[in-house]
Amino acid sequence: MSRPIETIGVIGAGTMGNGIAQVCASAGLHVLLKDIKDELLDRGLKTIEKSLAKFVEKGKLTSEQKAAALKNIGTTLSSQALASCDFVIEAASENYEIKKKILEEMDTISRPDVIFATNTSSISITRLAAGTRRADKFIGMHFMNPVPLMTLIEIIRGIATSDATFEATKLLSEKVGKVPCEVNDYPGFVSNRVLMPMINEAIYCVMEGVGKPESIDTVMKLGMNHPMGPLALADLIGLDVCLDIMEVLYAGFADSKYRPCPILKKMVAAGRLGRKSGQGFYTYS
Ligand code: NAD
Image 1 (cartoon, rainbow, N blue to C red):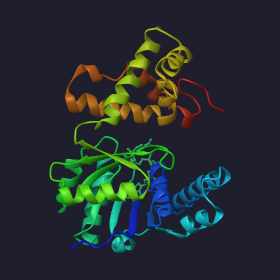
Image 2 (image 1 turned 60 degrees about the horizontal axis):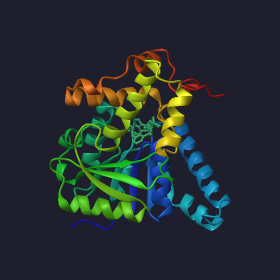
Image 3 (image 1 turned 90 degrees about the horizontal axis):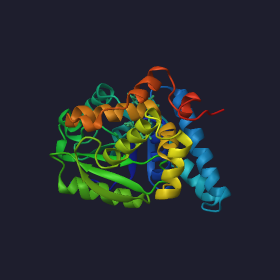
Image 4 (image 1 turned 60 degrees about the vertical axis):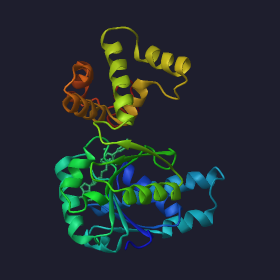
């Protein structure tokens, strides 16, 4: 018999993990946020505090709600501390070996009724689930960046995910104020399968001289009503992340239509990763 979901373990306090911790804590859940270094946990908490402060500034939260959310978040460097969690969300680095190790360890620590959700953008849910003894209680919970602002969670069923796991994850997604959308386990799921080839095609347009980055982005913004052009979005996501996802699609489908654009590869090799490195299709100060 599974217990009510009151405490969420969030593994990884980076871009996604701290956002996930924030939305769970704001919904009144207790959160234990785990990372591998104190400074990463501190940075995660600072990001959460700043984000909550912005909500207060905009009148979307009261100062009391901000304080209550922060009070709901504990941090730890120890996996063992997550033994009390009723639901675990893994949001560690996008690397199969790292995730496999974390999930195998958590499998020995968590109660058998605890559901494991992974926030992976591209690794097979079925493959990650297979490393645990709870494949029926394993699911993809793909939050969008920035988590506090984006409404969607792509909920991805692995081959063995049970209906009960799906329902519990759907309810939790709604509780944290999001709209869950069910998809199946295929490379890139739906979000990145549709988004990344569009970005990749925009990069081919740069390479072939069809237009300057500004022109390509303007066409997509004003012509298609996209809030952001594909190249500005690629810079925001990180060109290394875009390349990784294109490689996953290319390998997963063995189809040349997913071939990463050569200048995407070249820019990543040069360390031009977008906003985070100060240079991508645009320059950032
Ligand atoms: P990130 O690099 O900002 O954060 C990852 C964190 O995981 C780091 O702080 C790292 O120290 C930590 N970590 C690594 N090993 C760990 C361990 N053993 N225990 C605890 N923490 C550990 O990465 P991110 O952008 O937050 O991505 C996290 C996950 O979310 C990835 O699977 C990524 O594919 C996915 N995702 C990212 C985005 C995005 O736009 N960034 C969007 C959707 C999903």
